[in-house]
Length: 126
Length: 126
Image (tube, rainbow over all chains, first blue to last red; front, side, top):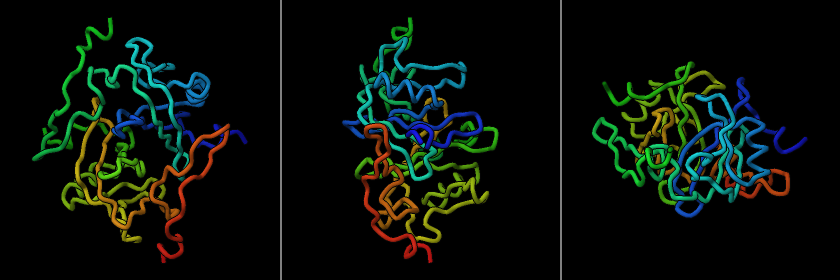
């Protein structure tokens, strides 16, 4: 059985992929993959996800140039979660122009933004 | 609107929670939370998940003693993923007795186990 066929995709054919900066260890984002996007990720050695909102393959950085070069791919004990170690080109993973999507922290009952916008999204997505 | 009500739970009332060791930065596991388990996590300051396989609340470490003390909680840009920084008591997050669930790495077309079992599961779950 091929490595991909050992994975447990959900009823929609998707599996969560956690993406971590290989240098800092920061979790940059979590997105979803289907069989094809993971196959492409392995072939291109760059992260390709499945966009649920756009219902299509999403080669990370296709518009922004902020591609993610694959350093390592892991799976968990249940083979239903993927963990990517990547080199984040441009140092921006989030569509808001921040380093990572997890820019809000829980503090005194509220979500507080503590990561700065590095580049205005209007300048990223032209 | 309360902090919890700002989160986007899926059609099953669940949200993915990524759990990271606050010292090493290693991603230990990914599990699911519902509104109640996140509320309990905040109250107890220890991770409480929703077990999809057992269809019930799952206070991490309830059997094993390997509880996860909460250091920090973050949410992503879409408010549909949670990121926990924890202190992993016992140094074992995975039910296989390993430090973390992501103990298999992709290499030459195969998933290769490269994390040792720290404690036999039979000694953990008596």
